Image (cartoon, rainbow, N blue to C red):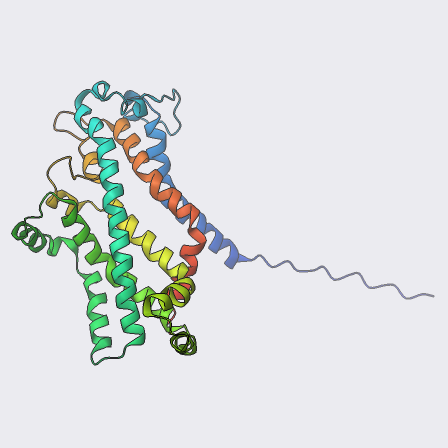
Length: 297
């Protein structure tokens, strides 16, 4: 008589609660950050009556491109025709200021970072901490001194005032990132370059800058985006459309008479497109630059 086979023991399936919680939190954070941008894009394709309707329309039921076409014909923008007319010039101003800020920040940051990484001097660490501490100072606390300084230098309502201000705030981050990059470069490479009679500019071009390329891209994009999006200093230091940037002109769509939500949303979308494209193109280099540059060398 054969023995009866024991029934198989059912496998216990453990629900991965930790992964579920992590994914749910990730989805919630994604919705939290994406929802405002989606709402701006959706509003830019709505008619004004649909944008302010109750309950709100989450999807444009009557999509239109009139809000974007009004920038080509500003007279159709009713109460905000001047702001619509000034938007192309403001975009050009933002591009000029942000580009020059990024270049100045990169040039000064490379020189300062090399000094901190390769030339030891007394008080270097304390000085570096002071630079970093300036990032912790709220801009609203120093806007008045900056205004008085620029007025004394007769730089109000000029590109130079904005570039100097933005470079001041972006430079500490640049120095911190590039300093750690330069410290990872072996001194043997630098000594070999000197033996080969390379000048300092040649050594920077052939050794330091290629190795620190991800960090250079990161700090350049960071300073560009910071200058592109800045509002408060541009509001205080500029007064005419000759130098006003995108955030100032977009805010002008909210007038004392009326607020054109749809036209303002379209202007916001146009202002977001250049930074969004830059980040999407260089996102891998940005991540590499932040990850490698933040490691203490």
